[in-house]
Image (cartoon, rainbow, N blue to C red; front, top):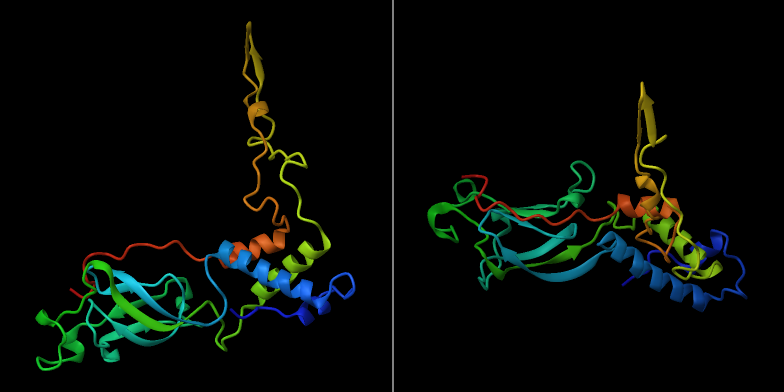
Length: 246
């Protein structure tokens, strides 16, 4: 796993005291908080060569949980041979359209690309047949820019996080009273009176306690949290069970 930032990046950002914060401590902090950042975003931001075993869904589309940079081969339906690249299309664009938010491999109709002598399956129709780990994909994966680099906002978030955790100790949960959330309704109505009638409502808002942040003990830096939200991987969704070209 390559580091997204270097010790020199943290020095340039203001962590110049190499006596209190030696290079070894900074390197260890980069490794630690890079893993936290990846876990928070549910994806990584460099190129990694992987062989993936995925479940077939009886459709013509195979969704991948991480952006595809390039594909070496695709083996479908437990077949030992690699599928001819002319039979499928890889969605790995990084400009327009940007396929990093919906990385997938889509099979093509055999009526467009083959004849009766080259069709790998019957009925002139390809599909990722339903099964467990019966589809194999090998290639390079990761959320990177066109030139293969880590996105600059991710580098900034990691740099700030590393410096914050080196300069400030990790807060102990419960040591600081939680800050209560703002009122749900400004100017909540507690009591009203009309001609000869008065109604007093229960003060339900006093029972609402402060809600702890999901990153309590990690960071409360709003810029870092915003970058995490921007680069968080989308939730996985099942592919439809019917090929779209039928």
